[in-house]
Image (tube, rainbow, N blue to C red):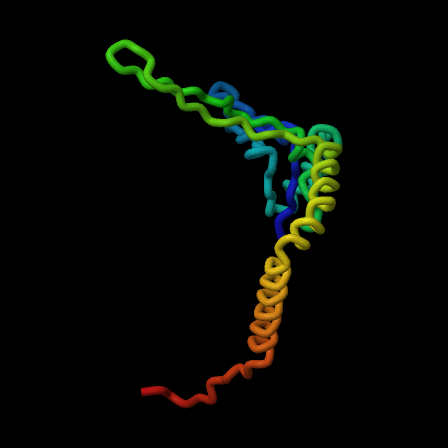
Amino acid sequence: MSTKFVSKNSNYMLVLRPGIEGNRALGTHAVPGLYIKFQAGVVDVKEESIVDMLRSHPGCGVDFVEVKESELDPYSETREEIEPPHTITEMKYGHAEKSVGTPRPIKMTPVMKKMVENEAKKMIPNILKNNPEILKDIMVKMAEELKAKEAAAAAPIEENKGEEVK
């Protein structure tokens, strides 16, 4: 079973056990370190001993939190991208021809999302009033999906009775 941890930062790296160099003069062996890197702010840990180390780390609850499978990422709205947006300019004969850039994703605060949701709820009755066939199409599709699920659940499962098929 894997446990999911989420960080505020998208490229957070954590040292659980620092590595120690070996020393030939003293005859000590090198001890490898244990490091955790959060990819895009998320890490899935499968080993229970590492999960215990993460839970007991002083940064747990401050820099990163444990998230259950049913919960959403609490930092997804505020986490920034690692890579900055790039603008690529095409050059032709020493002159800039055209610029192509990656658009930045729009970050919406919870207040803005609530406002958009309220406006959409206000628009739905007008849309359905002007286009009643939309609601009819939705109902027909839902009924078809329900019938398909019922048919799949009611279909008998054939068991192999030890007969060989030639």
